[in-house]
Length: 459
Image 1 (cartoon, rainbow, N blue to C red):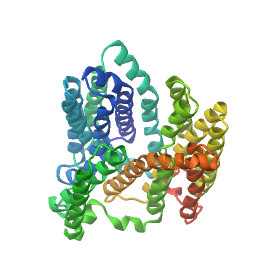
Image 2: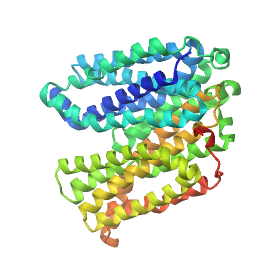
Image 3: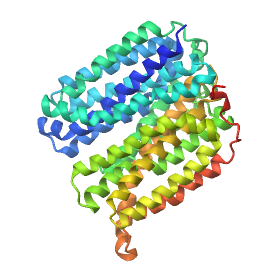
Image 4: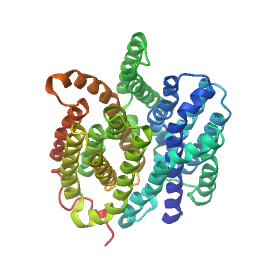
């Protein structure tokens, strides 16, 4: 049996590794484009390949965990992630780089859900909140340091260095997983309930949906390709619905939505991410386009947003103990709504200091809401549902973020046509829509009792 503290460090290192890898790539895209003699816009599929693969292949971790055990699945995930990083390091073309990111994404899709499942399975209930919150804290440091480290490696060495940098961390995680994960996951008894007939159509649905969400709004796909993807998604959906019900329940158990805490946590996470996930991109665009300031200023505003999110991780546990989940979610949503509306007003009047303050506050409130929703969803899961519940939560969150990004730019184009008529900045119009829509989440959170989530708190 493994110790919870050792699992905590394994999960923290894995979160840090993945967030560092993702954020380093963002700043290196122009250098990669120059080295591969490609336009910068042609690099977008390379950035998207990782996220698309993570979404599409997340259900596979449940199937593998049931057949191989969670320990072997974790070791395989880390090996695949490391192999993908090495392929990216040696890539000499955009295709090879995209293939490497695809393989890395496969490893990422298998890695975090199975590690999170292990933490839920072997951590005592009264310390679970603390562990779930703190193990993502190191991931936040990866998000903060990734752009800086990526810039230093790209400018000082080569863009290839950003892909070799996570490898030592991956090897450390491999060693930790080999040493501390239990050999018997206790989940193989249900393996017979899942078959490829259930799994493959679901992967096809997720793959086509994420491709459409990621590529169609950016005009990266032609109309015939979009139509073909839509038809493929429809066929996969029909095949999935025709597969046996026990197999579908083993992969993505809809029955979990009968648990109030899970239902509210998952759907609350979808709603808040749908309305708030695009705000960092919107703020960055505002600073560089509407205000006409250099990219360095936009980077500083993004840093303020990340600092707010980091503060939320430190304040989360005391606030939950003091106010409880219901009050944190209700009042936090209303405060976040007011801050988004204030940000829209600051943009309209071009008040950069107020925009900076709003960035910190919105980063804090967004991370606070996300932490509350994610931990609440897990509080009444059991050993048999940790893995599948994690899958549902991760998939819903990622798809909500992609949908938010997919809808943001068409909405901005629409509001830019109204700007001369209303004499309101189109970014401010978007924030007005988001800020007024956010309180609708309270209709969901009000169903929680004041005692909800108490099982996660230490006495």
